Every structure is written in C-alpha cells, then in structure tokens.
Image (cartoon, rainbow, N blue to C red):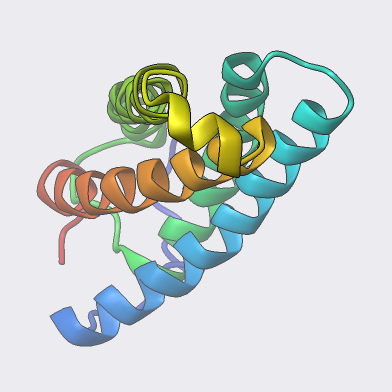
Length: 151
C-alpha cells in the first residue's frame, strides 16, 4: 500500500468534472450498498446490521474507484496513511449513515403511527437509506477533497 505509482490516477480535472465523476462512483456504490442492505433485510437480518454490511462493502469499492477515477493522491501521503485516513472518514460517514437511517425508521416511521399504516418497514428502511446516502455523499465529497486529494 505504499509507493508512488500514479499510473492509475485521474489527471487533474476541473471541479465540475470531479463532481460528476464522484457522482458516478457514488451512484455505483449506492447500488452496491442499497442492494446488499435490502437483500439482507429481506432475508431477515436486522436493518441496522444490514445497513452496516452494505456500507462496508460499498466503502471498499468506493476507495478503489475514488482514487482511480475521481481524486489525485495527495503528494507525500503514502497509501497506508491514505487508507487509514479514508477509513477514519468513512467510519464517521458510517455513523452518520446509521444515525440517519435510525432516525428515519425508529423515530419517524415507528414514531408516527400513521406511517406504519401506509408503508411497510422495508419501504421505510429503503427511504431512510436513500436519505442517508444523500447526506453521506455530501460529507464524503467534502472530506475526501479536503483531506485526501491534491486536486
């Protein structure tokens, strides 16, 4: 995980193109995350555990794709330190993810009795996951650009 092989990094790109690429990577990782979350939920896994598993798998995919297609590596930051920083930022993102889903399901869905009459729990989890993904996506772009990217 160390070394300076930059052959697979994106060339310097403008902010707009970087946001588009980040969106494409995020969109792909969303489907990984959402698919695993909902599959596990449907087979009976607790929704917070399912969301955790989906998030972890998509985080690894996101790390690989982010530095291949979106961000240029920060000069002087070796891959081990970069990965550790990525993981720390991602764990914070995971906390935000879990909090938003919990708020949407436990507080909003179960707290507002009328929602239970019109939505299934699976639909409430799916909605919470979509809201959480949007919040975490903004957090991820800002923190990765600030702490991990040279562009």
